[in-house]
Length: 211
Image 1 (tube, rainbow, N blue to C red):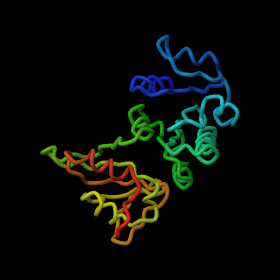
Image 2 (image 1 turned 45 degrees about the vertical axis):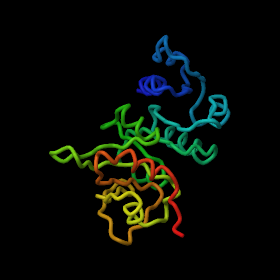
Image 3 (image 1 turned 180 degrees about the horizontal axis):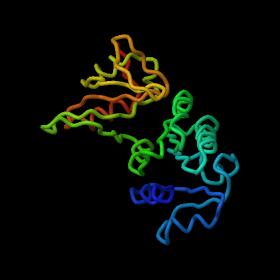
Image 4 (image 1 turned 90 degrees about the horizontal axis):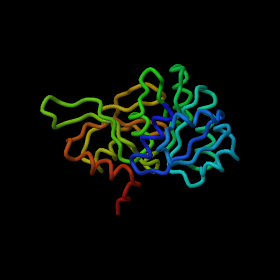
């Protein structure tokens, strides 16, 4: 799946670097892959530096080990400041811990490269529900970290949407007028389909201060 994700990113025009302990694994990338390949451990700092982590916009940890993935994701975020980080996990019971650390995770039971791509790339809503007319969708929308500490009602005011629910520590909850966005929260909005791009653009930037 890591090879599939790398190829999908490259097809979208992104520069991709792949890290793997087993050099033979790079053959899964296929003959047309033009990205960088680095043999090493995904959470080793020197290996990550060789892969270009200091210039990375996003980082996906998709090895076969939960501990390795979360460690690599934390190093990418906390040591090198990569903003868009996602980790693949095998044990859904660990999701709460990972969410508390502020690392979005995707469990293997529902893992697809499309889900990974949407969490890695900007302005990639995750549609969850569409009304029969197709006009309204409920979607998970990425929110810039600058919104942390603001009420969810502020997101609604800025975008003209409604927060249908939010996910915190792996559990969904209904917002109240006093609910504050916390690190690791996932926000699910009810949006007019025609306005999705505008909503994503607003929430992908820091909130505009009121004069």
